[in-house]
Image (cartoon, rainbow, N blue to C red; front, top):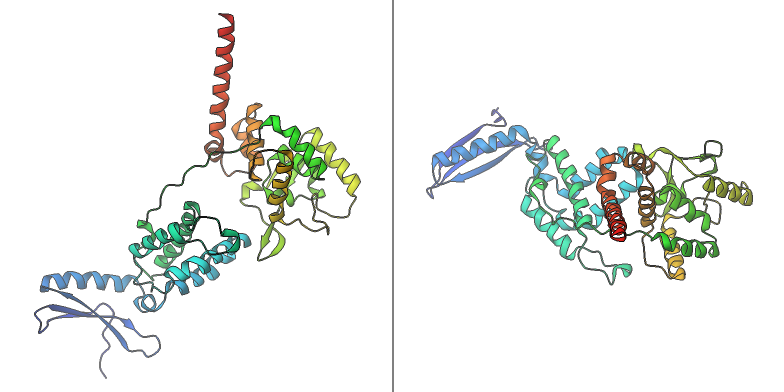
Length: 384
């Protein structure tokens, strides 16, 4: 019986066309058991020896058979379902699954793991930036390309997937590592001017949403956290709200979910005005729902309904357009302007570090310093 050539063995010969060729065993077919041969070519014997050494080293480090047969689409599905899904939030899984299905698989899914290159991926990212938006009715008037932020998120996802492929001996190196994206432009933070709050609250009262927005501007909670508040989270004696959950939309279903990070689980101190407001609201509403701000049927409110409602109130009040998240920014600006330090603010917001809070809101204190300097100058000029 003929001896099977072991992985890593190779032989070199000179071909009739004058070039040198090295053949080596890349493995055995898992179904038939037959040897899988590959070759490298070169102009000289020395060149072929160098190429062969590289390929033999690769054979020792990666599963060539699987890498040659598995396409990117198969690996992304395997990676997401087996390695990531058990440890990620449902909303994150939904985002990843959508990006793979809508962008990755149509773009590079057919490439085999052994053949995909940094250039393939760079071209893929470039296409997403210029023409990656899926044709939908709601995106009719939007740019054809995806935002740098969205493409950056897809790049981060692919980097993790290919890094795991390296660990599983499917590929030698991570081809995503060499890809470059444009720098994300930092958007100017918008907040609601303090002078506009009275006008906004008046319209919120007329719309029956005053308590919802008063609590938001008093705490700076994330949208899902605010919707996830239950009456059991209110401590009237200690004057606190305990943030334990958020309301999210997953595959069309409204449900409770875990918070964004471990730091997001926190207890927020609230003022007497908020305590009184919540007590009055509870007395009016009774125990018809465990949620403080429920949907009409008593269940959790749809997160997607919050922004349209916010826009309507702003429009009726004749105020500038804002995102709902800008209410959180407004809370932070008011807090900093009234002496709250960054460490305390970071804890109230549920950020993972004070450094992150400083990075996001540091410019607010710069504005405050300018105002202070202008006030001092005004006093001195007046004295002169």
